[in-house]
Length: 81
Image 1 (cartoon, one colour):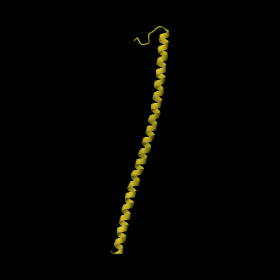
Image 2 (cartoon, rainbow, N blue to C red):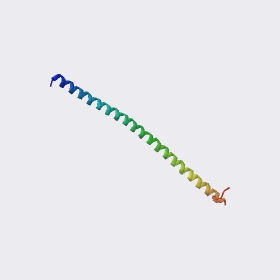
Image 3 (tube, rainbow, N blue to C red):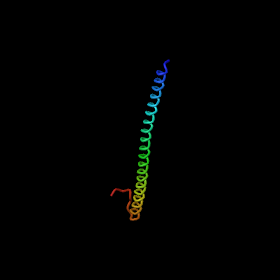
Image 4 (cartoon, rainbow, N blue to C red):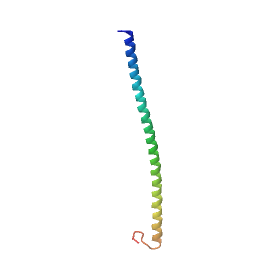
């Protein structure tokens, strides 16, 4: 085999390997960005859920206190007004 052809074949294979590696790196970078964005969104939603739970507990506590107040004044809190 001619040395020039051998060099051309090896160079072509090297180019293909380099191109494949570049594509893999680009895909990996895109996935990393998506993963980071997803983690940030999950953290934000988790914070919102925690806030909602605290608000619900405060509302339930307030409703209980109002029911006690009604009961002290002889009003059944379960009756419609």
